[in-house]
Length: 344
Image (tube, rainbow, N blue to C red; front, side, top):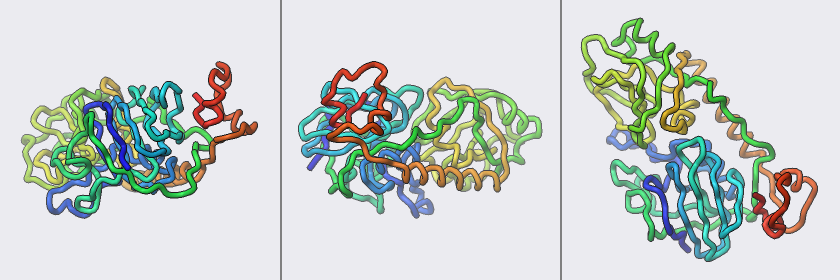
């Protein structure tokens, strides 16, 4: 059975948890830009959190499946329609065989995730289905998806219930800083420059992709130039090239680099930075290693609690609990949609 791509944006790709154990060969992990959002989409469909799903930038697309599937879209608010019936992001829905699913533009974020029951079953390459767009590796022919592509679907797991979180996931405040740990080459920068890093605003520019995000803001000149002997680089590393404008490395970053790395975005905050729309202004906050590690543990615990809190949706009769979970202020304009678990 297949999922057919009828239309899609320019940056839609197959992703799973990522390709591990090949950095020594120059192959970075790839995987999602926003791991918690992809994990939620998969679990809403009854999949393992590491199953392959579709990641898209800004615009979703139009899709059709050969068999009836459960699906979920996460990452941000957007217009989603099964046929002409609007459905909510952040919960699972049913798409019948031959029906058309339309996923519109994301609002207030960059990366969205579209998971289906059974997952996307493209062949594994080096133990993963993740697409590495820079290398042309994995996913569907190693590239971004386009109209006419047909993706194999895996066998669905579980009992097929439609799910939603028991309560809305916690949201970050826009004013929350992005936390960083200094180094490993912070000694290449004067105290005055390091002070700029944590006290002045930076801007997300349009120069961004799955490899890196270039920031605008105060110059960060390095002592004795911006060339170093190449050493290891990881997602979250903040390199400062000769332009003195920092770039934050992302999911498909190179495994080594010859620019000094002034700091590293902590893993708990990197998905939030990836989701910031172009033009967003923000600040960095320097923290120590124990604080970064505790933030990672808290994020993992919060995600596990969210995934464990998923509850079933009504698919045939109206319970008071289900009705209270729906927005009925505007009126029930389509009772059949409510009965099928497709509340707007």
